[in-house]
Image (cartoon, rainbow, N blue to C red; front, side):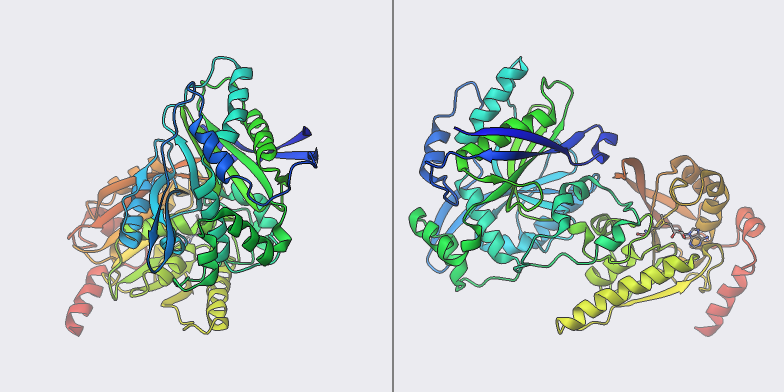
Length: 544
Ligand SMILES: C[S@@+](CC[C@H](N)C(=O)[O-])C[C@H]1O[C@@H](n2cnc3c(N)ncnc32)[C@H](O)[C@@H]1O
């Protein structure tokens, strides 16, 4: 028997703003394990598989998400479903990236901000190379229409029973393989405990996070089919596997775990806390793992969205959105969101791309790394922001130099005022920026002057006919009004609605029309000081 007392940890507040209940993590205090049961590493194979077959008929059978085959060169290959959390609104962009880089079709979940796709274990490393995903997990089981019981007690009992009936084997194999793919980091970072927090945390990272956030996501090392570890991980014989693990990783003989529950929907008779606690307790009993909130080896995820239930095992320790930034500002944008914005404007070779309000430089830095055939200019009127951008660029360059990779990045930094750019008319291909929302940065009142003057100056420097802008703002009313005052210099092509720090914001894709700047009464009357745009154009023509 196991006796447990529980502490519930409310992991995140941000999802409340988007209608989700906060993810909750289960931890058991003073678990008194039954010492008569072997403290094995992954006591799951036959027992769990058998149990899965006996799934109670009141619970819908889970969608099968794994299969195994043997490849003559790679050994046993398992196919599993991987789930990824992505910036809300950019699910289709993420699915597009999966298709492009891994060659499989991804399914966009009903639960916004998630996608699912199949992966074979020989391609597992590729999931860590995706740029649009925040967190990754391997799916243990999925229920599209889980029939929750009427009463809380019955439902929680059923969740407890579920733990021993799930087909854990393949997902745990993938979790182990994933561990061997990652560079051994020694201890888990403190960031581990905040991983789920960062998952729901949107672009605006508090400045205080900067100090803690100094290390980057490390990419997994690519494994060759000859890799001994990889072969050991997929040996079909579970006893051999067990022995291998005990030989090679004695320090992880007793697995530590936690359960995090994300729940959304108003028809549940139970809370996330209760689900995490009861499901977590049953997982602990079934596997004889030790619960640990901060130094866990395995994070089991229990995602409940209305009647959809997905149980998974995390494959990332912290959100991949933190990959580029070491010097955070008050409104640093997630690199995954930056990537989505960059994909929207499809950078081409030798394009000149401007982020005129770059803050910490998250957008142009992501561009310079991922779409490095273009050249980026990052500017801001705030000297602290410019310094942070310079520091972030230097940090990436140093990291690259330390690894012996070429460290040059196609990016430059400058301090300027966006309403008066030191840039020639019609010389920029793409403008991509995250404008002050008027909440943490600037003010709503100031936006009424700032937005029109920015849009006008952007229209001046952007190439008529082919230039584009991708602009993020939550101040939709002010933005719409400012666009309507541009005399047709910009045409709105598409809007992606995103969640930024719990705020409903728009990413606007604009096309610079063929209209010549300086010819509408608005341009002539309102352009500030730069004045003679037509003269600039004449000068340009004379030079050609
Ligand atoms: C929302 S923040 C950008 C955050 C940035 N994307 C990041 O990841 O750190 C907006 C930025 O616009 C800058 N800004 C405001 N008015 C400006 C102006 N007139 N010219 C240039 N930059 C300006 C602010 O200093 C601030 O850094």
